[in-house]
Image (cartoon, rainbow, N blue to C red):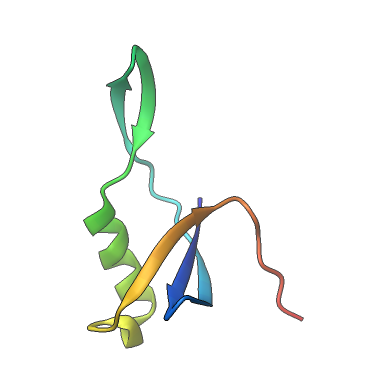
Length: 67
């Protein structure tokens, strides 16, 4: 799963999050559910400069290619 990190409404970086979520029964189907606080800790471990800053994490399927 890819995570886009946004700071002040602008793209900051993209991080590949490989940890699996927990299976949960939702509306009669098993879906993978992730803990947002755990994802936030992971992002701050990868990018320590984000600690204490106002940022947003968005899930995406689109890989960003840097030239």
